[in-house]
Image 1 (tube, helix red, strand yellow):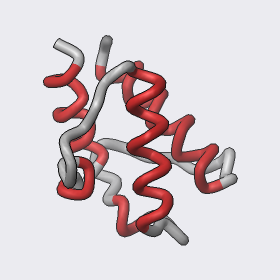
Image 2 (spheres, one colour):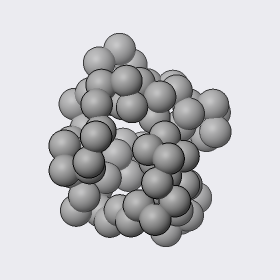
Image 3 (cartoon, one colour):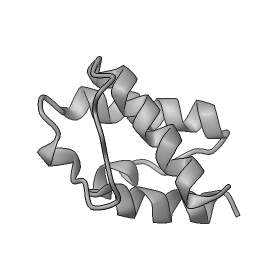
Image 4 (cartoon, one colour):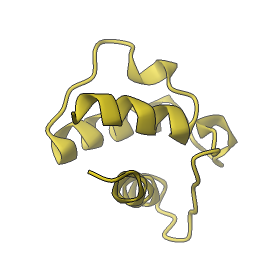
Length: 80
């Protein structure tokens, strides 16, 4: 899957989680910079990505990802 496709999926999931259809994220976006993003959103995001992409994260792995770029790199490795 191309990076652009992954970014589009991530954006869609984040828009759904935050109930903000106008949320725009880039590779440089940091999770902590997203308004009202919290640990529950992080868990929701992790679970949604796992089911959508048929992957799984190790315990604590997702919490170490602080930017969309880091998430994209992680997903690229898992989808090889």
